Picture (cartoon, rainbow, N blue to C red):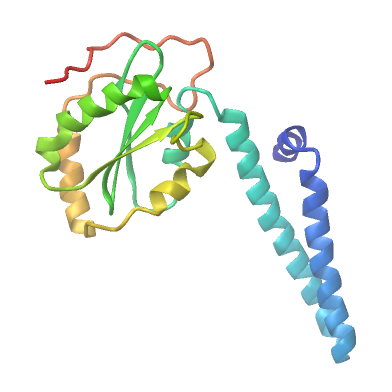
Length: 211
């Protein structure tokens, strides 16, 4: 099933996987011929070729997944929920009727607010949410990352890499304390799991207030 999705997203992907595996096998077999230990390097080449093929396949499959969900409301949340590492993700802590939304991520860098939607609409959501949590966050750094296709926004496929670049400002104990304080804050809206189909409507919630 994954191979079919990958083939539809990028017809060249599977040939690239096969070429990577075969190329690895050939290189190792040639080394075996030069050294004179072909009996050892042939099995090694097969194992290495399979491993390289699986790595390349996984990377291309992930890119295809990002390509499929890009532009759908909730795509950033889906990426955040599947990030590797010790992150606590709270989906849709703020949003509006246009399906623009803000997700809250807590980790070693501090608090990261991740928005989905056009740049000219999500600024107010981010500002209101940052003000709402600032008292609970106290002196902890609060970052904001805008996901989208506008200028200075981050593509959904690069979101995880963007968060991994942030500095580690907190210890694990401090992350736990921060998460407890933020989880105690009331939720303004609820969001279904995963990307939302285009054309869906978000339940109307309270409008963010700017003071």
